[in-house]
Length: 315
Length: 241
Image (cartoon, rainbow over all chains, first blue to last red; front, side):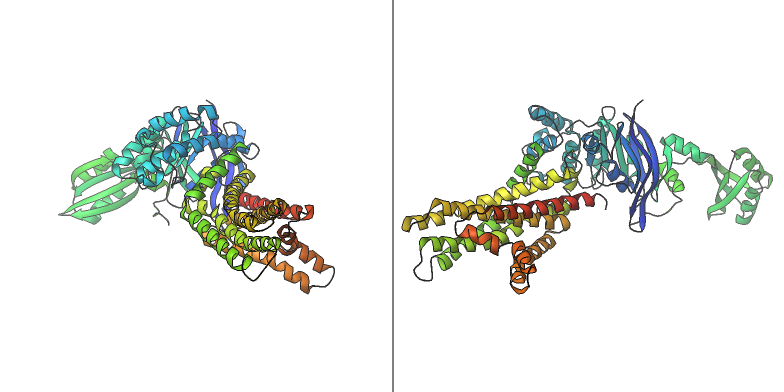
């Protein structure tokens, strides 16, 4: 499979801040890849470098086999970009704006009208072509933003926070639209909305403090973290006894008491191997009442928080 | 070339539809008419050529002011509204973006300037004016306007706010105008250098009198190209920030 995006040691410095730090990644053609990270993780800076808005401080970018530094215009022609705030001219009608965007991106004049109609159909804008952009709701503006990004049929579509600011219904519609881009385009989208990424993308890149700290499918990432398993227990008994009993189980590396109510202690143990049987035997052997025992499955939020060290979002 | 025209056309239509475009056009045309009546036609008997020279002199001032206000939105507005990525991620050279923007603004200014043609025509009805004088005056106004617009385009590239852009451009235009005073105050050979660099005095007065000197055309075109090049470099440098 041909590589669509390849970066080597990509770095971006802003005076005393390193926004993107030595990022090397490879994305295959036709994939839908989600870039996941907290605010300030460097997602937008990375995307802006990939689409040519920013020049890297160090490192190389190749898009569809072309060197972005050497063949800048050819690379830009292969990309459609939607920033978080759609880049629109409010005084124009949707049709005029899409014609402008198509011509600007090199669509031959004779084919522009067909491209505009086709793109409008795809983005469910056909009945809004005559409307001035300033009269549209934010959800429709986002659609026009996606339409301008795909009107020239780029090989790569880059979407920065495509669902930010949308209401639940618009989110569902936007998700369908982004999904429809898969296959025909390679799609790279950023978000800090974890369920959104997991529902839309084949592969995830987790970014933290300017670095890609992990990549893979949601399942792969969860598996990766699953090497250190977590088991949840509800045990009737005295708090200290429960903790000591669980800590003595072979293979357990940590015990955390999550809560206690009506004589029932809720605990979580962490281990390298699956120690559910040993833990159950130890609890019963100590004369404590084992009420429940389960392996904790990490959802995407859990994966993400653990990968990023559970830090709070930054401004 | 096609993309330059595409950007210029959008810019022209956007200016024509914007409140700023209307306000600038209305203010400039009203001021031109008023000043023509007060300064050019007033003040006792004059030869028609003197009336025309005074008319071009007053128009040169409003043209420079209008240029600063027309150009302040060119790139700063793109920053303010967040529409810049549309242009900056397109397969278009930064220089073509700048020239397209400048050209759109210049077409608007040219339209605005040519609307004032009725005033020299009024002078023609009541006096004797050569078409050559009118042509030379308008050529001078367009060249001066182009230079001021290029300065404004540069200011609009430097600043992210339209107000700041107008301030920077205004300051640059005034600084270039004041070279005329420096030229009078300085000793040789600097006096000639300063006088030559002045935006208005030495280079515009011949146009006012109906004379076209290649030296003056080259000067205004050089100022225009210099500031458009500087704006292009500034835009390129933005990709590093």
